[in-house]
Image (cartoon, rainbow, N blue to C red):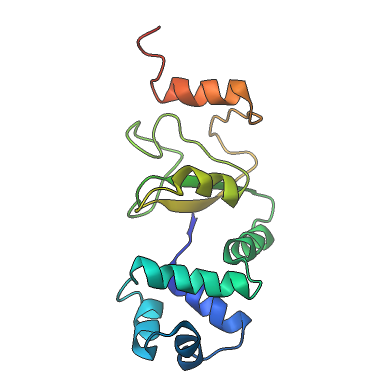
Length: 167
């Protein structure tokens, strides 16, 4: 599993634009000490600063998630690259081959082939997180594949229990 995190994103932004911590802080109008602490993962910025960081990258032409997806693609080898959007951050290592049937990574565990699709599921969640997985081509995991259509939506609703009153 790979996770997207702010500390790495800030470092990526600085490296792509060849900026020091001080220079990025000036560009964003925040203190250098906060940039340092964000990169160390000691503190997390408030919503306005978080938006400013990613807006800065976007306005300069860097799509951080696209860049990360490309890096993940480069590392996948013979594996399948998949993404999952979770309502909340999941702590610890995720063993998706031995699911417990609870929340995320339980029954009805949904993965998609693009980061954008997984991000759209959690875009309105404060604690939402996207995860990247490398799935071995010959794993024992039972996989159902759908095109995004009515059958796909019915499957999701079924696994989430939406039809329990009708079955």
